[in-house]
Image 1 (cartoon, rainbow, N blue to C red):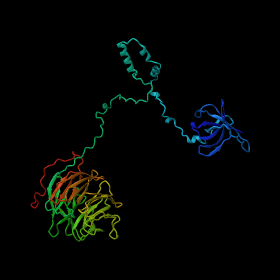
Image 2: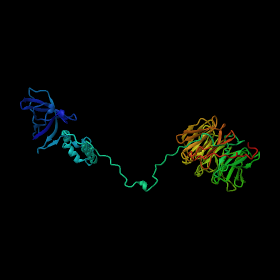
Image 3: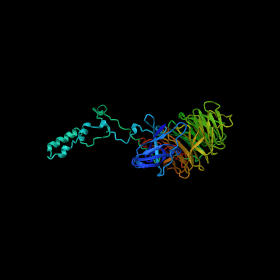
Image 4: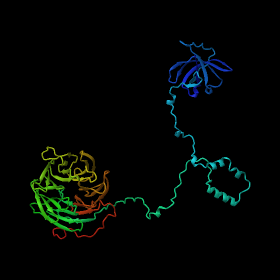
Length: 545
């Protein structure tokens, strides 16, 4: 059976390589015999047969036909090589001609290895957008529309030039490009202006005005005989906009709405001094912790004492926190007691964990978790749903990262499980906790004793008050903890802070016996209220200077 192969030179991009030996040369071309060769993968192969090659260089040969013969049961032995053989030349087999005369590719599955480009990927051709073409103008320009002007010997008149210019502008003929890409759509023209229907046009949303943080206090009040003790809590601002402050044995009330001052209670020497004050949520009742381990409940509207809670602690009560009708008290012996003020037997739960004095208590906004800080450098998270007096381990988390007493505690108003705590002089750090997992999220060294913390209810900000040696207030941007402002004015450590009901003003009390009011959380400069003259608080009392 006779088989026909298609050969190309190796310069043409071959797939199979064969070596042929020149046998005879003549005017009609060269006759070559094929010998051993290798395919593209490097495997050896043998194709018997002869090739007649036309004249011309090897790199420009057109495909030729190899004629070979095969017999059933064996192959015909190729003739011996000629004497006048020349150097081998390389050819490639590109395809095979079948019996019907059609050529078939010798490469298996060639169409699987050669990717075909989609019509949308033919980016090498310039395909104009015919919708944007002026075909009549293009036809005119291609047929030599400018020849008349170039061959004209007479100059046109002024009127003719003006007419031609107007005509060109009217028909948009002042261009020379024939093929153009798609143009941008024209700007739509409103047939009826929108302003006819609405006299006030819609304006873009104005930018949020920049908040101005005053660097000095708005008001300064005298607070003589205030006890300079890190472990006490002597200041609180109620929902009724009345500020309560304990000055030694006396509790004073200052109404922020009208600036009036009143005395709530003055204790005997054996019962005092006052060690803590805390307003109830209703803004009417207030709890007063005493140095003799008792806690008094007062109705501030009628200025009447309602009851005294006894028997829970053995020493002074330095921390108080309300949770609805439950008053939580912390004593210097380390115990935390939940008191139900509605019933006679007021002690309902006792939390044991601290070994030294409890100086910080804060309930979360949900009322389910209580945070406590003590002089033993510990922070405890108590869950009301799981804590009981009979359990050997009552706390939910025991946090030991601080290196000094922890008094400053503040729950985040926009994330219920985020707690901020501040350490004393040996720690100087503000730490942020995930109270669900007990993990410390961040820790920032402030460089001085952290006495109190207040979250901004309007923005993601935190205010901290500090002790030695700068006695300043620092406003932090959360969560980056970048300093936004430092407020100075106190000459002694700023032990206590309280926030107004509207969340814009913070009052601070320090060992320098002064109260300072800071408009640090005001939203904008426009929201800043004008400073008005008001009489000094406690002016009618001779013992207050």
